[in-house]
Length: 355
Image (cartoon, rainbow, N blue to C red; front, side, top):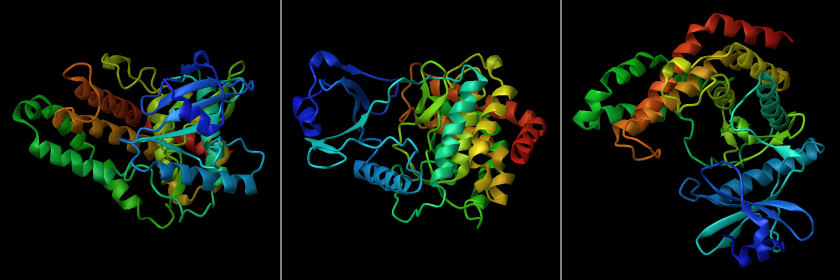
């Protein structure tokens, strides 16, 4: 469990029975603490295999928190509880630990079960993006370099096709061809990333619905959480990840591909929520590529799964031999369902931008 030296470092006293594993995240080890002072805290051990420089996470959060405290003092931004020595992180042996306050009356959900949930979550991500719009990005660093660099992901995909073992290459041949047929999505990104009015913003980069805290009774949005990937990026990263993870009734793990669909009411809800907050800050180029955001993120995740399959399943954990292959096929199906509905979904976006 949690060593007493770690608790002492943060000045928190708690009984061992009041420390419990918390949440559904797979990256960091997370615990809920009930302090003897009556307060609750979230304690996390940062996964340094994924986050090579934990100090960058801490610095990014502190910079963002300082900016928001000055410009939007009433905004709820979860900032670390400092150690007794005033540090944002505690370095214990080879581990990095951090603590944040637990937000009372809050809950999170692992999937969007109603359009209202999609709306509330998207609105919270949009509000944070709006409040951070205009922040000086020069002091921020990437917590995961090239995380959403589709150019790099596509190059890795092509390399995997070239070097894959013959058995896997033959098995995946048709799926590889289908993804290659959509390579225009990668070409568009290559053009967009240097466009003058498609500038970097401070983005969350992991906008799954369980990274928003909702009121446990009303399911209204409270705030954004899990800010490890808060770093400079493009608007299509956050919006695209919401489209990828909110609109289908099933997740990327679904193997019955007939169940994959784009629920238009969820798509409309997340667009309304997000654009009601951030819409006024968008450039013309960003506005023109809001539908593309979904294509971008679904395609990128699909080729990442397929690349890993071709490489012998070295990155994503698998539960059966074709797991990554099926994840890739799932994402291709979702991409095709999205593109089939482009006219009506683009109309949804246009209507949201008018309001």
